[in-house]
Length: 280
Image 1 (cartoon, rainbow, N blue to C red):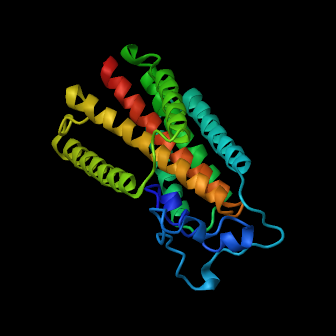
Image 2: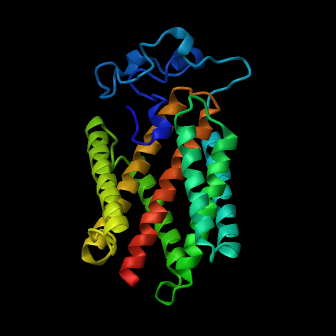
Image 3: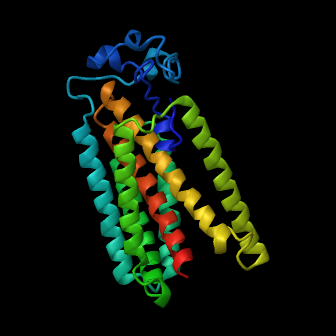
């Protein structure tokens, strides 16, 4: 299975074929254990590549564990929080600088997404700049009389979504299947296209564009954005689970942290916009 998250989509974690070459090298389950029962069998984009492109283990490289993922996700999210604190305290009134930080974070995120190997420096740089952007914008919103306290509500809402999706995934209330993935991908593409069209109408036509960010339509659009973010979380959990099960190299835990961070940032931002519409 390939995730909607660009961080994971190039990695090819798959319960059908394993993470290319890891079953034999890291002692993970073999593909034949799942043959015939696994909906992802044969979906690994690395499975047919020449051997020289498959990740190679060395005695110094051990497989990724869940502890690795948790530790690096904590470090990446901690960097976001540190950047947000700086943005909140010192850049609340300098929105141009904050937007510049957001654009720089986007560039770093795209660079990392298209790299075959994780770069901790890029990932932490993205986290710091994204934090500055979110902190400055959140501080600005918090200073508005009608929206005081909205950022904290968005943080609590994001945490609630994360916990709910983790429980739903672990108890298999939500199962990440090929059909589930296709549905989320199509919905996400439609959401992003509508957002882009609305932005263009706002830039060239003025006002609120097509109305996707205000009123009843804005509330509906915000709810869809939060739900999509929650579904992305389930897909990210699946990729992490498969990476651990099939012995992905330890360095891949940085990509797991990066993917989870980008999804949580999405949920927070959509949650903040939804709360702002509801309280305004």
